Image (cartoon, rainbow, N blue to C red; front, side, top):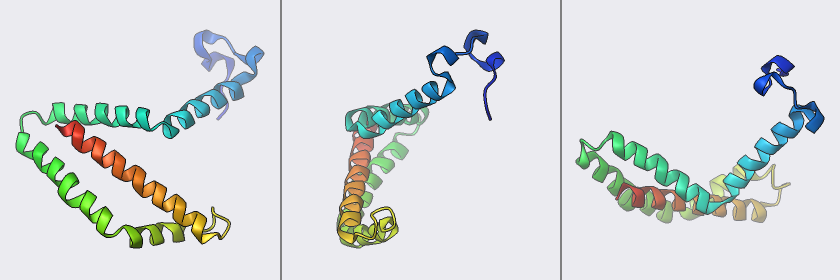
Length: 127
């Protein structure tokens, strides 16, 4: 769905700056930068968890349950099942890896590491 000049901010079309494609490209670049920054991801997860924690302040047992689930169950499960998980995820990445299973395995392993970092950040933010 294309935007018209009426839908542009303040009723002014930005076509003299390359049109809406320049705005879309800029937004995509910002999102991509966000996704590649582990520090920004960590801060985002912390803020997200803080919001969740603020909502559940009345039930500290539930908060502790989430933290225990992450630290003692999910992280342990990821570690115990790492090889099988890497292989299963790699199978799903074969097309994007042009059939190169080793490349797909490296990407799957990196993905699992990112998930582990997110879980650790979440557990730490639960405090």
